Structure formats: C-alpha cells, structure tokens
View (cartoon, helix red, strand yellow):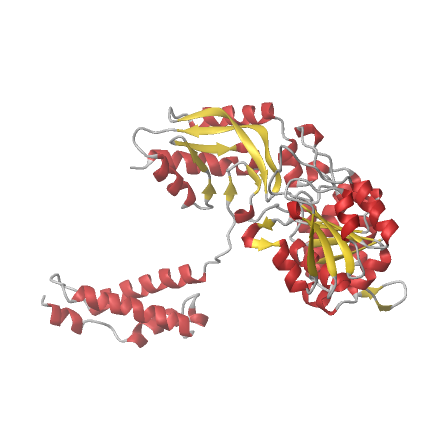
Length: 460
C-alpha cells in the first residue's frame, strides 16, 4: 500500500468521537483538552502513514487512534500530586511533603469536612465565634500560653507578627541569627516586607545581652530571637540565655518574640538531641513564639503563634491575618495532632513513631525483607537517618535498611526504576549502592518494597 492510499484510510474525527460518546469517558470527549489530545494523536498517525507500506483499513486505524486517545486522556487526567514511599531516611523530607498525617487527623478531617462544622460558630451562645478557639485551648495546655492563632506557615507567622507589632519601628536581631530558610527566604527580606526596620546587634559569632540593651531606643518595637534550626554555629560563640533575653524585654517594656522554626513540643532526648521547645520559651518569659505545624509537631503545614493574650489579639486584628489564616481542614488535622501530643500518644504521630523506632527493630525488618526478596543483590545494612526539614542540623539517628548492589543493573538505573514504580519509591544512592532506609518506610509499605525492589533488580 502506498502512503497516499494509507492516508485515505484515515477516519474522520467524528468517527473517533462517536466511539467514545457511548463509553465511560463519553462526558469528556468534547472537552477542549480532549479534542486537543485527539488532534495530536491523529497528527502522529498521519506522520506514520506517510511511511506506511503495509495494508491498513479505516476500521483498524479508528480503533488504534481511539485506543491511543484514551491512553493520552487518562494520563492527562491522572493527578499530579501522588503518594510516594519515602525510603530516604529523611524523616521530615521537604520535597516529599514533610510530616505524614496521623490516622486520627485524617479521621477528624473527614468528620468535619463531609458536612458542615462549627468552624466559626459558638455552639454555647449561638453566635459567631473565632476559628482559632478549636486549637487555642490545647495549645494553652501544651505550651502554657495565654492565647494562640494559626496561619498558613511559619514564614507567614513571622511576617504577620512583625507587621502587626513592629511596622515602622526597629526590631533588634543578632547578626548571628539573620538566617536563610528553605526556598531562599531570608529573615532580613521577610522583615523588610513586614515594614519593620532591622537593627543588627552583636557579631556573627558572639552576641551578648548588653548588645541588645545598648541598642534599645525610642524606635525599638521588638526584640527578635531566631532559632538557627537549619545550621550550627560552633567554636568561639556566645548567645544570651532565654531568661536573660526575656528579662531584658520585661525591664525595657519591649516585647520579645522567638521564631522557633521546627517547634519541638515533645522530647528528643532519646536520640541524644537537645532541641528547644516553645513551652520552655514561654515558661522563660518570652512574650510570643512561632513555629511550624508540619515539622517536629508532626501535623499539617501551619504557622502557630502563641503567647501573651494582648499581643496575640493585636496580631489577630491585623488585616493580613485574614489573608494568611488556615482553612477548616488544616485546623481539623492540627487539633487532632495536638490532642495526640496532649495525651502523650507519640506513637500515634507518624513522625514521632519513625523517630522513636529502635535501630534493632529496623534491623529485624530489614533482615526479614532481605529473606523475602531472596536475591544476592540485596543485603541488610546499618544506616544513618536525619530528621530533615531544617530541623536539628548535623544530628543523625542510627537506622537500618536495604543496600542494593547489582552487577547487571547500575545504581542509577535501579533508582530510576524505583522512582518510576507505582507508587514511586524514593531512595538515595551512596558509594554506588542504592540505600533503602526503613526508618521512613511504614510497615504497611513493605509489600510495595518487596514488589518494586524485586522488579527493579530483575529487569534487563
């Protein structure tokens, strides 16, 4: 068959559409995106037929075009945001969504989202209420704070506090705390956007309480202390204690504010890590603290502002608050996570269950998986996990997992195959080995590992 004769067998567009209009995808066949994909398929088919030598029929072409179109449409409709298996050993992996939510949080989200809720309705008085009350009580119990509000992340919390309490005035910040957090967001730039004026005190490595005291003047509106959660300053260093910082604020009448970043509510002492928490800051007399909901708290993305009632009320009354506040789903998840902390049920929070898992337990799981996979390319091996998410820099936790080395398949190819699996399995490569750290793999994901690892090392 000549190319010209083959091209004459191309079916008209309406023939393809008619096939689909009686199928399960019928309601979308005339959507603009679907018609665009059909045109792309038909263009590709015409290009192929220009080099066609074998016999083709219109019916066969119509069936093939319809099948290709269906595949393209289904791929187009596939959600971009997907579940993945985190086998990197980075517990708070920013690129992988940080903290997975507890079952209790998922259940509470469903409970308050399938119908209506009392989001801003006071059931006792029958009048309009404030959405923050749903978490303020639990935060007061956990942190010893007088009041609290929630915004969409901690960067927003810092921006809002600075704008509400220090716009047009000076904020004292140690030179050693002018940090940059993820995504190239820098404290000086956030402060500039807030309308507050940065007043540097001390030096990069040494700042004393006297540096703050000598900088206080008529233009001073706030003293800001920033927890350097994504780096460590070591060597010849000095920093005022919390009590010194809070005492100066009280004596001078200047509000004190601490950006704690990861906001560790529970104790990491079991891992040999001493991480400051918001409760300690409030107990020491710091007026306001802010921290993230999706880091060491183990909840949804949120920025929590807690402390003195009068200051929290001033922040709440700022017009920016409405633009930065969170929705009912975030509040529902956060309330459930805070309740688990209050009950001391840390193993009910996935992040904390991962952090608290003993290396010996992970070794048992690794060895069981190795026996199940039954391939020489896979062995169990000790590893080092990290907390991640800009939390507790340079601290590692002993872990265990799978080390994969194949003479037939490179580590890069194995990593690519795992990443292309369903669901994708995200691993790391070190010294030509594919490492699967079980600290961040849930037990109910081990069947996925068995299937995907077996396939990745078994393919050509």
